[in-house]
Image 1 (cartoon, helix red, strand yellow):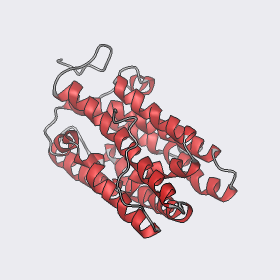
Image 2: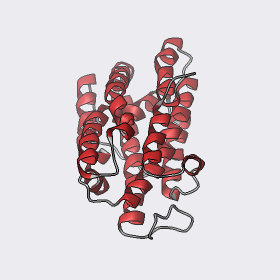
Image 3: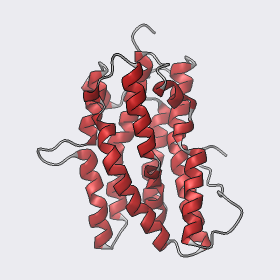
Image 4: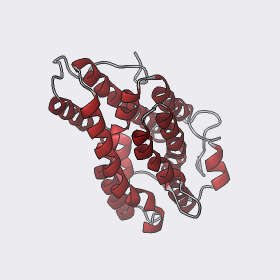
Length: 254
């Protein structure tokens, strides 16, 4: 069964409490989060060339620009007004509001700073098919699974701040084409991600009241880690191993 469709359980032992659930979620992050992927090791260690970093930023834009779509779907799943109110700031975090900058704007600063044409980035014409399939699968997941699982799938935010800190320091240190002005997306997420993760973790601990529901929460997080991991698999295959598929972004000199 492929990584995108696997919902294998994280543990054979029943999860009998909220505390056991949290421990298992943190174990999933420690063993499955995409910070462990070889592509990230290359990216943060200064081992990629500019074209490879461009390919990463271009493909990642499709994920970033789809997060507000995903969050709008999550909101639509809830009759509870308090949950909708709590969740909706996530859309503004990425889309921005009238006269304010959002995460998508900050990501475009990165791609512009890397020399990519903004219209081309926003068109998603040059992204890898695996990127599109993985990101679209995430949006479909929060639409088709239970509201509890939809919220649980966001719990990768528990592990994001450490990755962002590593990315900021590593990329600024190793790449002369990176400057602090294009890294504002990650700097802002250092504040936003812990707030969002705290709410989602509290929600699943409170609302997953049976071992079966707790396992569904864990499986939702496993699915999300697969969504993130497979995108890096595709980038590694195309831009590190050199198997760039027809129609995908082609760095200068390739």
